[in-house]
Length: 251
Image 1 (tube, rainbow, N blue to C red):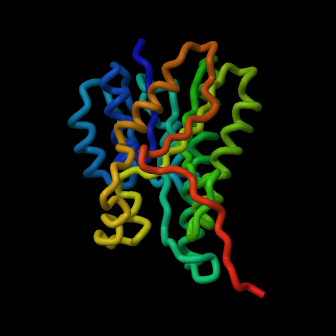
Image 2: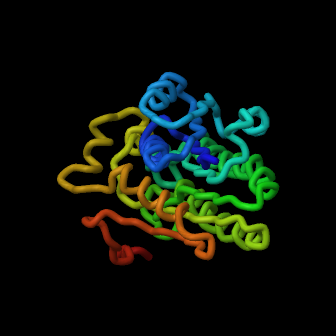
């Protein structure tokens, strides 16, 4: 019987690459995202059965309805990849747009919770499952302007650990994959469509690619059942840790 991976945010970046990675290994996929034409394009590239859902993970009712309406051949879900997420704005906390904060909390935290809660009963009934959450190094390493985005990814890290504590007795594995500097649409969304600002982030540096993250996700999800990979932190080879900031002259 074919295994099924449910991937949110599959219309670009990590999600698209992850869907193609599982497909290449013979898995069938449930791909979801807000842009239907991109889902259609991805589905046309996949060689194994795939079910696409136009879905906004911020809508709890829509998430529950989509999971309940899955065709029998795609249920239960073996692996859930909670990839849908975003960063918006890079202003300091005293200047940030509160609407940007709400959007990040609603997507990165609430959307991840809604999808997880909707899929878990299927996994428990099946006696096996794996939840892979896409976090970020921003959940552990702060930077100026990362305020709420970093806080949402810190939630992803701790929620992943707590999920594992809850679900270990039910044979459900949980992994948090935390990429660093990666070239996707991430920066273009953060800078609200400013392509020049987004391009400058990757100027003269070799960042992580979506396929690199997809490889990590599949590796974690394909370990033997006696192994749970709790967390994978990935940085670009050109990225490391900065000295702590010291501001002189403050009184």
